[in-house]
Amino acid sequence: MKKWHMGLIFVFTLWTWCNALAAEGPIILKFSHVVAKETPKGKAAEKFRELAEKYTQNKVKVEVYPNSQLFKDKEELEALQMGTVQMLAPSLAKFGPLGVKEFEVFDLPYLFDDYQQLHKITQGPVGQLMLSKLSDKGILGLAYWDNGFKQMSANKPLKEPNDLMGLKMRIQSSKVLDAEMRALGANPQVMAFSEVYQALQTGVVDGTENPMSNFYTQKMHEVQKYVTLSNHGYLGYAVVVNKAFWEGLPGEIRGQLAQAMTEATDYANQIAKQENDQALEAVQKTGKTEIISLTPEQRRAWKQALVKVHQEMASRIGGGLIQSIYIAAEFDPGKL
Ligand code: LMR
Image 1: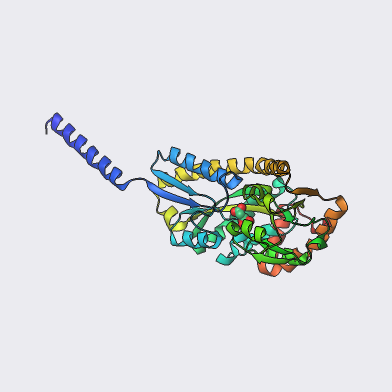
Image 2: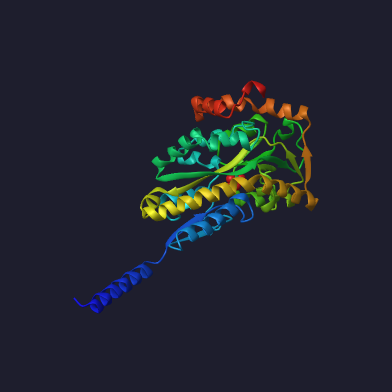
């Protein structure tokens, strides 16, 4: 065959191949979440989008849907299992209804003093083992993203644990959070995140708990007069993907997305504390919500009121898991 002829065939093959690729278009990855764009999770989701599109040279297009635009809490997990969306980052407190109760261990009151202690779990073997439990449910756990430590809010000052007596408090779906509120004498009410502002405004609930980044970006300061800096528990996320989607990706693309996820995770965990500190300042500036700091005695009283939740929940979460977390995080329950 003549050289020019061979060249023509090569060009023609390349042209056909490019057309085929163009016709197929990019792979669409829908990432749904329930918080505002300007939160640690919202920003990390955007970072993942940017890196994923860059590393795959736009072979993957990531569509991020914040603020429960697409799905609310419970629906988003169902949508992920059905493949309607491909990626989520629900809080660790929301996996119970899926049948994975182990993540509720992160809700145990006063289990972690700070982010460093928490990272011994989320960045260590116990955390990895927990993520692997999701694979039976048709989803894969890729990473943990931090938010932060929760503060308690209401329209009355909450200084002593029994100040919560009889209050209707919104919680996420975790049974540990239910036990936590009951230990304080409050009436817990499970509710989707997207409904909290209105429920506080109309008095359907009296108060709630959340890190300041969520409190501020949902404008809860407009409808809550007091926030107590109780730091009584942690709220963070597991980033999860639909298993069939992830395993069906071409290996090279999966590797590029995994790299984007590693970097987005570092970013999420770097900004979380600062975002929450800034949100606290912003709430203070609004002048609408009074910020209450606990005295050492008051903090001790909160801890004493809440420590029993660890034992109460052992049969649900697994005593062995709780012990392995105590050991890995160097937590001493006797010190509470
Ligand atoms: C909540 O429902 O309070 C949180 O889980 C929202 C979130 O995703 O941070």
